[in-house]
Length: 175
Image 1 (cartoon, rainbow, N blue to C red):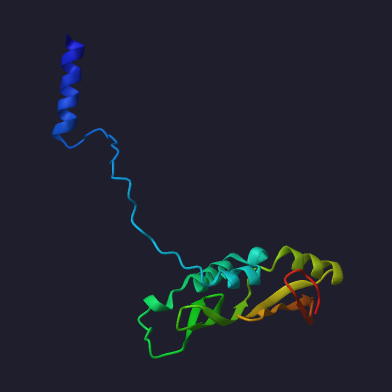
Image 2 (image 1 turned 135 degrees about the horizontal axis):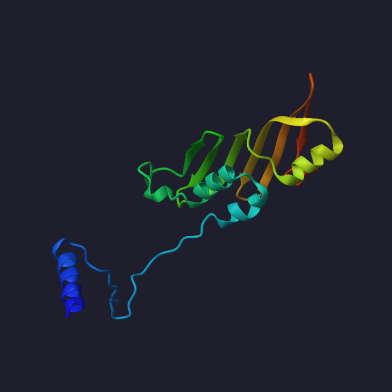
């Protein structure tokens, strides 16, 4: 009897002070889901740049460029044929041109001192043993009709007081 009274007392306290137990319920609908519209305008951009080995900030900014909807922007007006939009992060920037329908026409991208892909660092270490990468610049240019026109790493290498500048592609091939 004491246990029953103690149990009821505890339950009474929890409901009096707002300490209720959680319960979950399921809302049953009529089976109709709201309609959504999916636009895959700029998938060609992401497919052509192949940023699988790029640094995380580069990937995130490129994803933002691909997902940007110019029609929802305050800049949008039916009067213009194309729009230039700049995207900035501390590591770099992308200047993107969109047509009036929101399709990506071209980009110019430049990032400084980001993490270079493993292929690039291995290639540099193999060709220039004892040298370290002190600075790097990653440049990409994309055009709708051509795909990636340029994708390169400009590296400054140091060995003591000596400096050397080299260029590679994302796979570590020297240009």
